Length: 77
Image 1 (cartoon, rainbow, N blue to C red):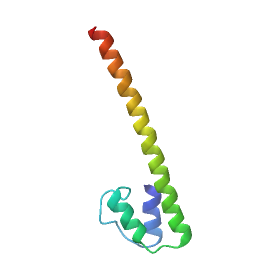
Image 2 (cartoon, rainbow, N blue to C red; image 1 turned 180 degrees about the vertical axis):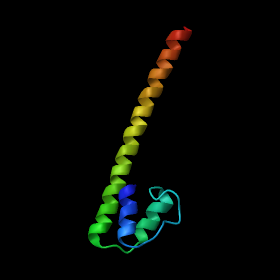
Image 3 (spheres, one colour; image 1 turned 90 degrees about the vertical axis):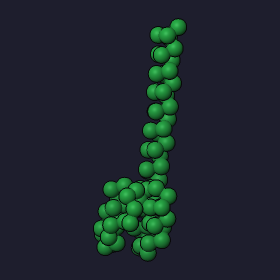
Image 4 (cartoon, rainbow, N blue to C red; image 1 turned 180 degrees about the horizontal axis):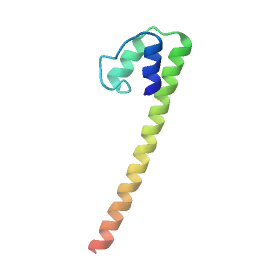
């Protein structure tokens, strides 16, 4: 997310009109910006990284939930 904000600052685009530039509205707003090709690629790369990290976090949270439920079942039964 910091990389996206850095691109905006470098290109004098100002503060985004939404709080989450990696959300749906933010991504639409970013896609509509006129940026140099290298800056557009930097934004795209940063968003791919956010997507990857979000999926990793979801996987870890799912594993933790399964472990927690397993511990609860053993202590109850």
